[in-house]
Image 1 (cartoon, one colour):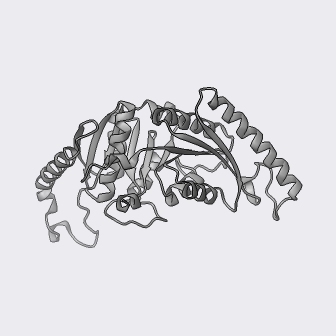
Image 2 (spheres, one colour; image 1 turned 45 degrees about the vertical axis):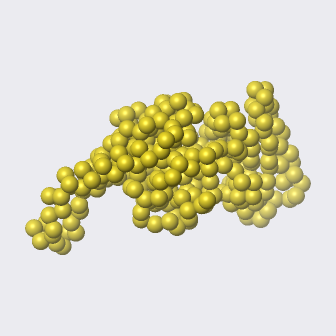
Length: 313
């Protein structure tokens, strides 16, 4: 893997807000990241004429009158201005945007693509309500479609702020996508002053029920050999960069998502840096199963790197 950390520099940060308490926490965290990286911050509110995205108590079957939309938009712009004022007091450059669209995620992704955003910061939930375990549907949709990394902030359970994380875990499966995640993690660790844990998980063989274990190849007998090879590959990957902190390497056995979560908990990792996909596929509209499970269950912040980035440059 070549040393391309410079390509991962964060120069612009986008933080969508629905003015909920959760999204305000994301705004505060995005501002912290913007200060650390010297990045330009964009605050975005997405207005959607249909459904509960507009206001909690308005669910029209047809678009509301333009006069109502204008009044709501004016109020949103006022709130955005107040948020910006609380940030610019520290001399951080901030721009505000109130845009209409058919769905919040579409507005957010389109803005990120148009303006070449380097990082999107979102809370795990907004004001829409329904908890799908621990991630909101708008956030999930943005992650699926985003052209740039997405930082998902977790404020539940007293989780450590990502900007204060002192240890970062990077799960790798030796794909190009996970190698790109390590590059990003090195940049983040250098800026945060954090350590890096490089982790791979060896999944125990699962035999289909119709086949007796005695009739299947005894893969379990080869697990020590596989683990040894994984450790050598991890050590090699950890030593391929000449910049950033040296990564400690770890090999665990079991379900990949559960072991990643357990490692983050056991080692007090405040940030997980993970690709949307590993070796199992690169569809931009689908999340890899491991990444999805981690996002839904973790109490750490998660920095999600689109797998497609691995094939840019």
